[in-house]
Length: 338
Ligand code: SF4
Ligand code: SF4
Figure (cartoon, helix red, strand yellow):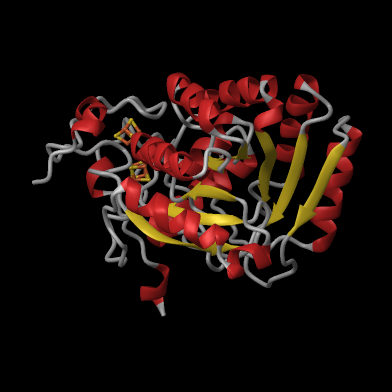
């Protein structure tokens, strides 16, 4: 086994709010189930902020709607990834790509770390940034987060990031757990911290999912953000059928417009939306005895969807779950259903 001195903290991993304390170098697995940091893919990416994007494998959430599930749920599926890459190597090829004609044509000017959840690979990312800034001291960096780094990790992320794209999955804890498998409180704490450092914020991103994250959740998120600072930038993303929700309908254009209006009414000044809309799909009817276990109807619906692909828990909390390391949801492959 390769030994990584610079990643010693992976021997007692507390990088994210799960604070598993496992020895990832020795093969112990926390919620993310990752060992050493591994790259899934890396390429120039034209979506704002234009960048050289590094998709790092592994995630600390188990979201029903994951659009990058092949990357996020590695190593529980057979996805082909690049694997471990030396930080100085990826720094060098990333800077070259950004400076290339193709990079300049799309306006690329930064590294963008995404996943999965890049928090799981934070010490490796810090090394990449260090080496990229040896080559170009002005090199910008964007960090993409699901809001679940530990408090200490979030300070580290703030210290080297020029911009942060920050996903808020839901506001109500019951809905957040049902959708992601994780509690919402650490996310809301990091949202509050992010608002204090809004010069580092690219935007908060909220995925609008019919019957799960729709107007009730959006109102709660918008009021929470507006209370912190009405000038925080927010972008609503239209859900497209994916992963466990691959037969779920996409968000309608009307729902996206209503989300923006609601957020503006809550006081937010910089709100927009993006994405494809009105993709057909089916909302299931849920047995009332199942729904009765949940305060929020949306949480009940999401929990029902999780159950359909093998989640064994009524109220998801992946860290406390007995099936954490043999999770059917994490190993789910929607393409095998056709
Ligand atoms: S889930 Fe978070 S704390 Fe647990 S092993 Fe993975 S990165 Fe570390
Ligand atoms: S079975 Fe357990 S680990 Fe898997 S998604 Fe459900 S709660 Fe999380």
